[in-house]
Length: 230
Image (cartoon, rainbow, N blue to C red):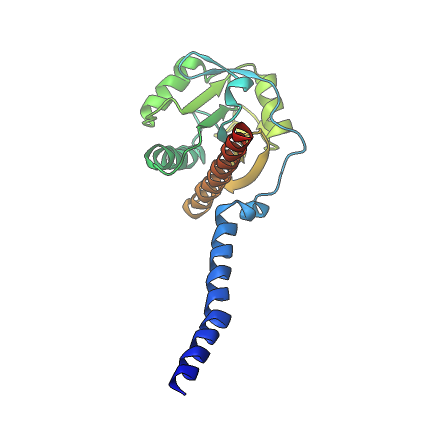
């Protein structure tokens, strides 16, 4: 009778506990393998277009240099009396997070586009970057021809950028949103760049993309190894 009871208990364990364990493992693997990317739908019909803009370091940044990088972009101007201060402060948090997070494996760039290129020369942006404590070359402030900048901001990033009137306290209207762009150049999210909680969500989503790419890289390596051994 005792042996029967032990057998019954063992059977119940197999029937009830083990499937639950496997379900838990499956759910964890779903999380790890990027199934949650459905939370980050494609938000642009085309990938990032070709461009060339000047950085605050005096270099030229070409679109080709961003291939294979996760990008976070926003719009500011150095004499802005309003939201730019908060945007830049939050972008500084993003820079700190990704440069200190050893689990984040992807290459990345933070791009701050000026909407006031007539004033925001390379020298002006360099002084602004120094004042705001930019720590790495991962964060670039960009300037260039006004038409080219506005074309990129309005037509690709889908953010408003408008020169209102020089006589006003804030002569440029622009968005407070940050934009998350994946390694293929597609927009994956918009976030209020003046709000700490929303910027935390941006960093989480960028980390989600990073996990996805790491797993894809692992799958490709396994496939190459398998083909090599065949």
